[in-house]
Amino acid sequence: MDGWWNHAARIDLSTGNVTSHAIDETIYHDYLGGRGLGARLLIDEIAPTADALAENALIFAAGPLTGTTVPTAGRFSATAKSPLTGTICDANVGGSLGQAFKKTGLDALIITGRAPEPSVISIKDGDITVEATDLWGATTTDACSALPGRTAAIGPAGEHLVRYACIVTDRHRVFGRGGLGAVMGSKQLKAITVQGSADVPVADRERLKEYVKKAGVKLSSSPVTSRGLRQFGTPILVNLINWLGMLPARNFQQPADERADNLSGETMADSIVQGHEGCYACPIRCGLRTAVGEGDGREQGKGPEYESTWALGPNLGIYNLEAVTRANYRCNELGLDTISTGGTLAAGMELQQHGTADSMPEFGDAAALASIGDIAHRRGIGDQLAEGSARLCQAHGCSVSMTVKGMELPAYDPRGAAGQALSFATSNRGGCHLRGYMIGEEIFGVPKLFDRFKTGGKPEVVRRSQERNAYLDSLILCKFTAFALNEPFYPRFLEAATGRTYSVSDLHTIGRRIYTLEREFNTAAGFTRDDDRLPERFSEPLETGASAGHTFDMDAMLDAYYAAMGWNTQGQPTDETLKALKVPRLHEATSPAPPGCRRPWFPRDR
Ligand code: SF4
Image 1 (cartoon, protein in one colour):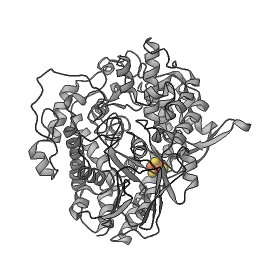
Image 2 (image 1 turned 90 degrees about the vertical axis):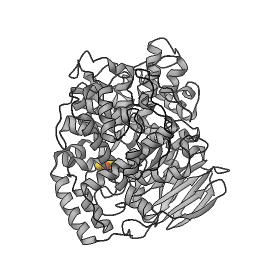
Image 3 (image 1 turned 180 degrees about the vertical axis):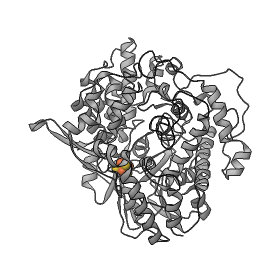
Image 4 (image 1 turned 60 degrees about the vertical axis):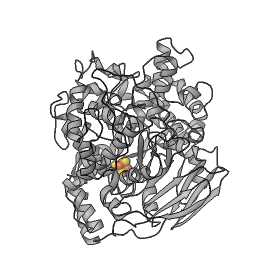
């Protein structure tokens, strides 16, 4: 079947057994690849109530476009149950790993069990081995340099089961969110190396070439994809979001700060940027090669990207570009998700501000960034910080954790965009901007501008955004392409690659199926409407800045959103919806909670 190899591999690390894993053709058609395929395979491997650090499976998956010439078609996806949130969690990465994996003749790799000693999985054109390694303890940079081919590795953070440890490839491209690096660490799996040389299966190469050419014209004529991202990288957002009063400072206690320009894309371009680079087959090239310091103290690396800049900068009250850039390098080397690292440090700093945790660092203290190493190795206060902000705040009895479902929120104050607020609240992997990126609609007007403070009609727009991102994560393509390409491009790419006919509507149905399957997993793990909440801080309007004076009726938006998704008033997928979307039922029906009965969110060690 063109587009896919119809072949996955399954590795039981406990025994070292490698077996071929058949995937039914209908699963490809219903879930595509990447995030969708990962979710569908995961439910066959673990129970939703499984212990994320003891009973988990980790699934890497490519998509039907991976390794083709379609712009940005080099991405690669990982899926498991998150040790940070207890939800299902996927993360996808750019760089060049995905295309190399697809060229080995595999669509997916299912990893179960725990190796008896630190190990590396090597895949060379379908030949798969598991071998012991002495790289345990190495940084991600050193591990990737020591191994052949394209490599994904964890650092000390993953080895020490930091709940937001990430997996790193190409030095700074990361499977970032949700602690998938800790899942690898729990399996004593240091790295995966990939060398592939096969031609990926494409049904109609001439047709694909024609669509790729048309897409290239669009991408090179959009000001966002041809200039903004290419010239300044994602930190181009810093000044804009700060100006809109949505760039959170000091753990979301302030909406903006006049020093933000110290960290902007424009300032980086004039100071630390050495060059630009792109992931495989990407003409946008938003990656920044940077350098800071002089003489013996000079360091070179990649990034920081926008979210990392904010998380390690304004959210901690730090506006020193060199300190933030070095902190970003450390997170990548140690294998830490920058957003959760910054969000957890920010919560610790606010605990210190309130006198609840004197051992924590103070806002604005750039020296506090040295504690990143302590987090990765669980030394001193780093051991508490390694648990994430929700558990940290729970331990100190003070609720200043800016999380949804236990995952630290990214760099947008939700009071500045009603749809983004709803998207944060209903994200299936917790506080995340990538499930539904309403900043496109509410700030950039892409594909259409909506008043950012109005709630009317937003639940439907959020649903479509979440569906679109679910299918993009499953094809797998970079979401930045959507700034320039209208939706009909995506089914055309897919048709040319697979030889099957798809419409935009078909892709939205697939996106909704994926989102509903993830929701069904979470429901069976115990998540309810009460988990679709923003922190209490956001029930009060901002007092200053361009987003002052606005809050939203989240309950009303949730009611409309659930209805749009075909879920009941508790946010559980109904039997009719599961049947219509062909999603397996995983949860037992439960009685609705009494109206007004709301419990606080607590981290779950499910
Ligand atoms: S736009 Fe940036 S993140 Fe996306 S594929 Fe291109 S270089 Fe990678």
